[in-house]
Image (cartoon, rainbow, N blue to C red; front, top):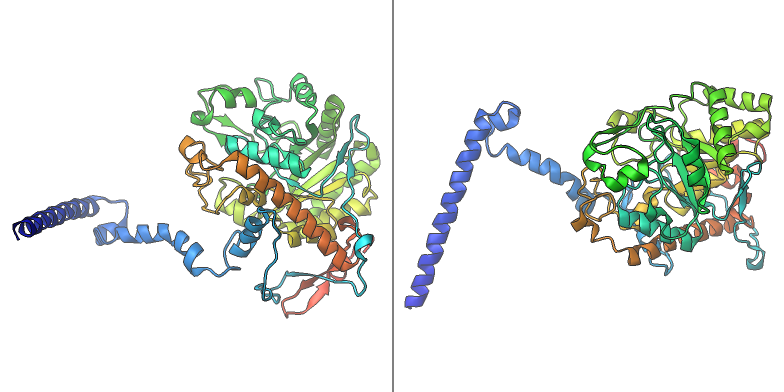
Length: 493
């Protein structure tokens, strides 16, 4: 009885203590809210006004896990992400009981299955394709689906290493991103595409100009197969980036060729490229110095502006042409970019790709310039559509981030990525176990390629690059679908 009474007294004292502490905290918050001038809600509704900010912050979490349907989320819905997650197991990716996709939404692609598809023994794996036939060392690219540019610095050391090892296992290439080539890119022994951004990290002199000696040194790595001159990316066309001084440690300084202790600013474009003639000259110079194929990556604002480049190629001769063009859609992603650029600038990939493919083919350069599609293409249907539209290759960054375990927490720009992919916090990086994740990367790439080949088989061709625009229909606003070659005719449809 005495023990029980003592327990009740202790609990009562704790309750009073907690209540008193809560009251003091509430009083402090009340005074702070009433006296501050920056937030009208908190000033007019002290203490309780703070819940608005809390619920706004948590809203993203609750929508993602409790309220949004499988096909509703942006930028990638749960069905898209789940397909990637399941594919990383390497155990197949079948579903039951029918599609959950609304097939009446305008823009939805519907592939045209053949009445008499090829028999199983008439079905072939995708053949390798040569890029840069006029380069000293052309690249024989094995895979139609590859890893798009993600810089070391934008993503973490274990993320880069897992991508490198997974790419090597799956036989796909890995784009370094504009941050230069790190030891972790080389770790797996995969094929690498070296991206040269406007700051020319890794191949620059002290003034930020292209340094031929450093370019040769990079090109001497046998893993470097091509160079990609980055003009623009989908999420922020026409805008450079800032690498804060606090992120430039000794290793980053060495890799990128920038000094420690000061911000590194990427220009919004290549200062020495003022016209298409300059662009072709730069591409030719990089190809000549490196001996490797060279192309460029950009976002299309208007295809009319690019006709001048193809006319110039026709005038100079096909040897001056870029070996490839990577088309990024205006919906492309990055760790951080201004919202107006993400939302409103640049043509979406599903329009831009068709226009550039048509320009290339109209000027007779189909066998000379390879087209690479980039921008929110993470599932087999996306990849198959791009190939039907005329792309020779497809690259994805966010699809491979999902394969690493990304949960779309949207914290890429805050160094608090909970999965260790886009953070340099050692504690958070521990969650990304390279020995496990590289296998998931390889399984994802292999699954996408396999299922694109299944789609190709279903529409009646032996391999994906034999698919044409007539093999896919696009749903219109009235719910009917029209063959893509009727919407936008092209050569060979």
